[in-house]
Amino acid sequence: MAAYQIPEVVLESSNGRRTMPVLGFGTASNNLKPEVLIEAVLEATKLGYRHFDTASVYGSEQTLGIALAQALELGLVASRDDLFITSKVWCDDAHPHLVIPALKKSLRNLGLEYLDLYLIHWPISATPAELDQIEEKDPMPSEKDQMPMDFKGVWAAMEEAQKVGLTKSIGISNFSTKKTQDMLSFATIPPSVNQVEMSPFWQQKKLRDFCKANGIVVTAFSPLGAIGTSWGTNHVLESKELNEIAEARGKTIAQVCIRWIYQVGATLAVKSYNKERLKQNLQVFDWELTEEDIEKINQIPQRKMMVREEELVTATGPFKSLDDLWDGEY
Ligand code: A2P
Image (cartoon, rainbow, N blue to C red; front, side, top):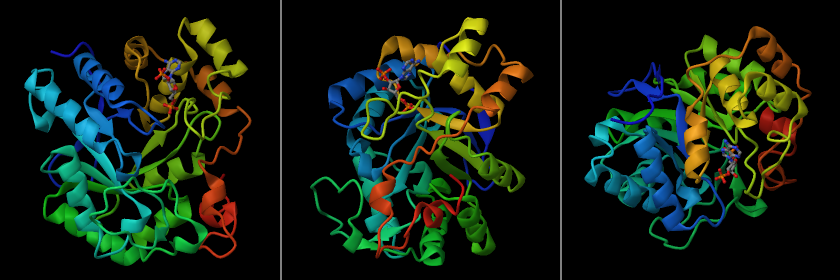
């Protein structure tokens, strides 16, 4: 029996497993040593984490797969069906004929027979890579490799992946409200999830409202500001406003932040490879922020915190400005 129970949210368009733990364990870190990740995953499963977030581009699928196999073998998790595993198709595989082969490659990496959720990582494609190439993928496609995505064709392949049971649910990531709306205009299986950067400093209010009205779950990535990564910032964990609330409630800033995300109706993938902080981040479901606290956080001046914006905004690529990429919503 795990130490903590994490609430779950319904994924309306899923085929099979219909719920997702609201708090997931993120694995997008630079230079993370495999042994550190394995130990953290084992610790996390003991604590009660069941939702693990990876992507082909993170280079963490194989190590996560090893760690989860160990957790199952050790009986820390009763069965594969108790886990919720998300991965994402990278830009160079975001082509109609490459989506399913890329998903199968992720499954091989993870040692799994199905994913719980497969996401389009960014709304942009890139020159296809050789599928069997072993070298690590480039973090972002270079300007000359960038190309507009065939959204309809790629989404049809995602739908096929769900229909044939390679994944229980499908979704999108880094899609603005407009791009999500466009997707809904032709999707026969609507996306279950849109995973975007979200924290008190980039609250994604418009997107959240739209997704809520359309049955799409928003998952926040980098909810604490992703310190320790190339795109990280200390704005969140050093916020004066969040600190005032944390002190008044006897909680940490990270807990206030996680609780705020949960209370405004979103889900999240948070990263920690530290035993104490893994635990601390789960201790957010037996207390509440007051309406005043929520309002105070809602008023925090927004900063533009785009992950690697500079690589995706190029003179000759599909997105000539941040406005193009985010349709003005940043
Ligand atoms: P660590 O692994 O040492 O705990 P994000 O989830 O926004 O990507 O942020 C991840 C970063 O936040 C990591 O550097 C992680 O460091 C740190 N972190 C995670 N949980 C906490 C916490 N409860 N308090 C302070 N820092 C945290």
